[in-house]
Image 1 (tube, rainbow, N blue to C red):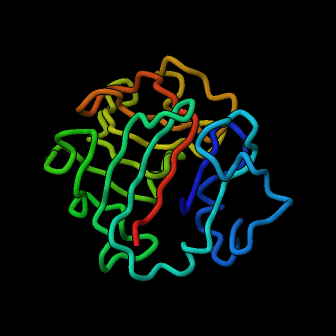
Image 2: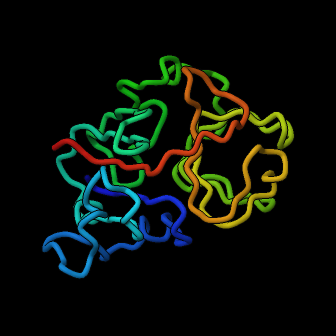
Length: 191
């Protein structure tokens, strides 16, 4: 695992992701919670995990990005990591396989980006979204809310009380926001 973002700990996962030189492994630290190295026992983790591999992104073959709930993988995308950088692998054209069956060729996708959308009171990272037609009609495969407020939160059927929140479509296509909230998102490369 190269990165693990924990839900609802009121700390920006994107800031940790960007923190070049900061990592929680190599060597492992006794001060970092052991639960945050794992994909189960999620309730006891109160930090995001960042590996030194993000700062040493070489010889990467594939990258798997996944959402987990109670230790069970809910959705995932596998990307071609060859010739990628720590920030370029998250790209629709690099998709090899996905549990969203049509995401690789979906022409409706307008935003497929790590930095996401931070305009107009929106704080969404790792976004795979369709067109914006107003908060109540926006469609998405996934995104992460990385602050305690989003301009569209009044239109959704959940309240943002803590962040980050991981939003994803549980079916095979983009959906209007429905409040499907996994515990964490992770990604790791295959060397």
